[in-house]
Length: 435
Image (cartoon, rainbow, N blue to C red; front, side, top):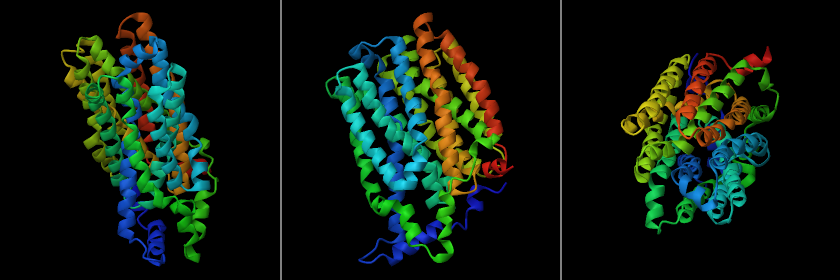
């Protein structure tokens, strides 16, 4: 199959937007300026899609003590992100059709900022969960719409742009894991301040989206200024004609997304605690988690570009899965002795996430197909991932060790590899749904 970048090279969307920029009265921004601003908006948004989770993972023990949580409740806390992503992510395509994807992502960044600012100061577990849900709601809609925005505005650069925002996402993830503990110590050791500081980054991400909010977002602007020959293209993208549940590839991609998310949230929520229980100091455990996350910075840029150049993505899926199995084995047999090696291997394995996002763009031909597939795969996938982190907390509390939780992680990696190979086959959901 030709890569998505080749297939969509002649998409009219960017040219229409450029024409609008050229015609806008009163000193319009150039096409290059608009493109740079949109790239900045995407990068800043991606930086904010995981600090709400990994900053909490770095301070989970302090939060548990401060709020009086048991191990099971802490496991529930680590399951809240995928629950919110599943519940709120499915609404993203409808919101984008009504308000425009730029406006929805802008509102999502604002929700993240508010949620992160108030959640440490709510005074109890229930309030902490509610404020976390507000932030995660913003993350959920942005998660779903990032592939849609890339497909719509950068149809000839799906691989490179997916790699760019995946790299920024990994950078934000790792930075939150690495610096949350030192920042907390610099602020007097108060875990509340250490968590709330990340609201500033989210507030910054609101600003570059503001020009794309007007006139129901850039999508509607493009439609209203399109030439007659192109007027029906956005309408066709918005038509919900695709019956996504008829596609086996969509189901395989949803399962792959869910299982890789399970592994990722177990890692983000519990890996630092595994190292701390093995005798690793808290600051070093945070750095180890950061190493795991920072592996995604270079690989999240390389893997999507490689994936778009291969007819099938199964070999990449298998290579990442083998790294995950090796990392889990290391955590079981020598968690402290080989800690840095296990952190590196699990970091490579976690790059199944940018691969899954890339396959979302490759397994559909149209913007509407990408939107539906992204919402279906992510919402269904995050539903699948909900029990994993919670079950790890329960097993940890009742077994008194990490043997059973790590065995669970190994058991989940096998089907992840199988469904990933199926999702990586050379086909599109439009063809499967039409049969």
